[in-house]
View 1: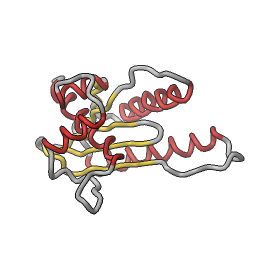
View 2: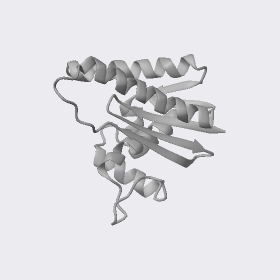
View 3: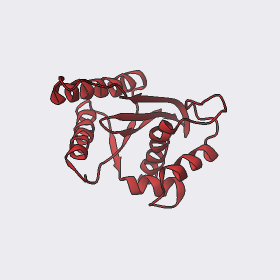
View 4: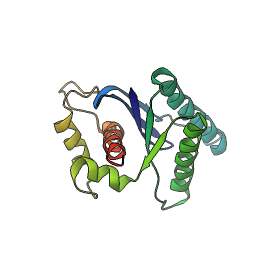
Length: 167
């Protein structure tokens, strides 16, 4: 039985696949491309959202998980964050339309389940995941250190743990 945990935003998706409490796969989608000022923001966002949905759907199709655990957004500070917030809600709804069991957790629940501190920062989250899952299949540099962008994969680990504490 597989479970998938997803840390999603409009710009990055960290996705971990779990079986019997172990990480069997880690997938990361990062949007780092630059766009010209002539390109319409709406067109760029539509393309990005489509790519994000396809990325998640590919993992769902490959593993057909029993449960999908997703971090549910809790608010936004500005219009740009509101766009990402809306995307995250739409992704959760999309996964539900595919008939998967979806469990949502808040960012605070995720951090607390991993570190014991609901206000843990990214460095604490990453360090705790590294300690608990040293063999996690996350991208490393030549020194064996995880890249900073692995924070999204680490968040998905915390999301997985919180989702399994809720049951």
